Image (cartoon, rainbow, N blue to C red; front, side, top):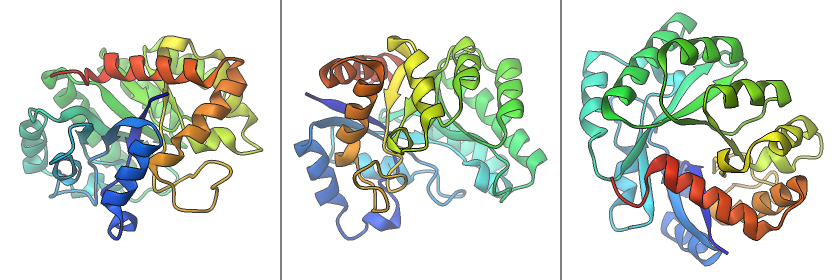
Length: 258
């Protein structure tokens, strides 16, 4: 059984002491491909994930400005992002979107930076990786008005209605460790109604480790726990989940070749 981690923050400082070992553990656990998210610590450095792909044929990268860092973005940021989106290992722009929980950047700035990055994604012909927290209506409104390509709602934690709204816009839904949490029945119901060709799985490591590793640093090797729980929720085998989510990743992110 082989799996794809569609969203991991391997550049995070929590991996500084054992990054190569964590990647090796993931491979040993059957995680054949990983998409490293390139938001890093925000502008001006947009190459956090690209640097990680050197020497690893199975690692791919994204480039983007997280809503937390939107206030750091300027004209040079978007110019540099446009250039980096042409890198052969870059498969998407992300994670981008809105975060009204922390409001680390003003909301109007978040919205503006989000919209500008959707333009960049369209110009590059790449999918988008969406972060949304306590900003569902604004996120969907901006996507509905400005986006007609592919993408994924990363770390989906909404309910069935929100899942249906995202699916109607053509998005994939990625489920992570939250799916395994005892009180996350709304997420499990969303996972039940997601079509098989729109499913993805992720770790969002080092955050949100699945049960039985909850509370520990998450890493790609733990992806199998989420896959197993997703199989239980959907009433199928974990091998089916592996095949479906791998095929979906390869189709959405064109991981077989750019």
